Image (tube, rainbow, N blue to C red):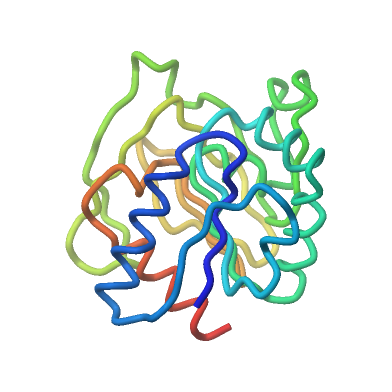
Length: 200
């Protein structure tokens, strides 16, 4: 199995480590690789778009050609996981802040997003949330300048909520969350994603 983690800006090394630990737990032979060129996504079984500064990530993805390559892969059914900024980039619609910054959006998920929905960096928070998709045990969620989903449509569905806001969604071969699963020891979200990649 080959998992490509978009390594243009943001929490890349943590995702590499989390994906490798999840592979080990599931007994999957494979590799998680740092991707900064579209050709590195050749043969990828899944792609992770990490957190970071979403406008920067989107523009660098466009500049390097990874933007169009991810759209092609997603269209071919390759699973995509977006975390924090990755959730914003996957959305079809953004708020005024997204529009004002010229944020490039992949437009792959039927969701509308709001940047910094829970405040600035100093309002960052860790909380245990119930996410039925990941089992009965609550999942530790780290929110850092986190976005939220204000609307879902089509076959997109909410999988997690926090303070009345949607913070996790899935749609067909894609999952996006507003938090940072790679910053905890719990690899269940990465494991779920890897199982999606196996099915694909």
